[in-house]
Every structure is written in C-alpha cells, then in structure tokens.
Amino acid sequence: MAYTRGNLAVKEKTQERGYQSERYRETTKVVTRKSSLPVREKLLYMFTIMFCVAVMGGLLWQNGNLYSIKRDMYNLNSEMQKLNAEMNELTIQKEKLEERIPEEAAKLGYTASDEEGFHVQISAENGSKAANSGDAAKIARK
Image 1 (cartoon, helix red, strand yellow):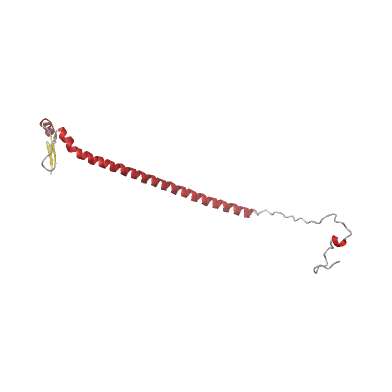
Image 2 (cartoon, helix red, strand yellow; image 1 turned 30 degrees about the horizontal axis):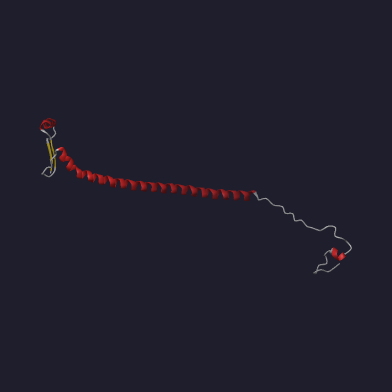
C-alpha cells in the first residue's frame, strides 16, 4: 500500500493498478430527510402571523375612519364657503332693495315723516274699529 499524506488506509487508485479497466464509477449520494416542525412551533408561527394580520387590519380600519372624517370636514368647509358666498350675494341684494324702498313708497303714495321714530297711521273708518278692540289708532315710538 501507498502512503498518501499520512494515511495508510487509502485505496489504491485503479490507474495505479493498471490491470483493471474502469467498469463502474464510485459515486456517493447524499440523502437528506426534511424534518417537520414541531406542533408547538407551527402554532407559534400561526398565531404570530394572525396577530400581525389583526394589527394591520386594525390600523387599516382606523385609517379608513380618519379618512372619512377628514373627507367630511373638507365637504363641510366647501359647503360653508358656498353658503358664505351666497350670503354675501343676498346681503348685496338686500342693500339694493333697501335703496329702492323710498322710490317704491313714493310710487304707492306714502310720504316720509319729519318726526323721529316709528309711526303708524290708521284711516278714520278702520280707526274706530281698532279703538273699539283696544288697539291704539296711532303708535309712536321715540
């Protein structure tokens, strides 16, 4: 036997033998067996994943609620702006109508009073009925 790198238990190679032809080739096959996970470890992984999914679901639900609240606020703000613009237009129309009141009153035959205050005059025929019912014929406020 040959002494190879300090090991005497080495087979001689067929090339050194020379008298045998190579009929077969020596191969080694490594067989690995997959071991399954223990039940406890499987349950641990499953509950961990379920917990993570539940937390993510809660966060998504909360974000959805916040989004709807913010959207409602935006809609209310835009509605308030529209109502403010409409109110400004109505205020302008009111001022224009107040300016036309004296003209319309003059057309209908009303005259402006010289005294300060609020005066209501009732005609003579209506005044007798009003005086009998307890209402004043003239209301004056100064």
